[in-house]
Image: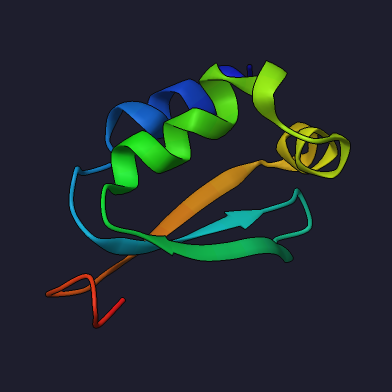
Length: 76
């Protein structure tokens, strides 16, 4: 895993938010929501053996992670 991604993962909150994965051209390659953002995003990088082929390829392309604050899980 890239050092930059490791640093980003340390700062992801444990709240309901929307997350976006970007490739190196700053194109959004994945966007989703999660009630427990920290656990969900970390699962892509720590449990890669559970991912299907398409998700593994996506994880290899991630260069940045952005989050969007929401007040509730329903709002996300």
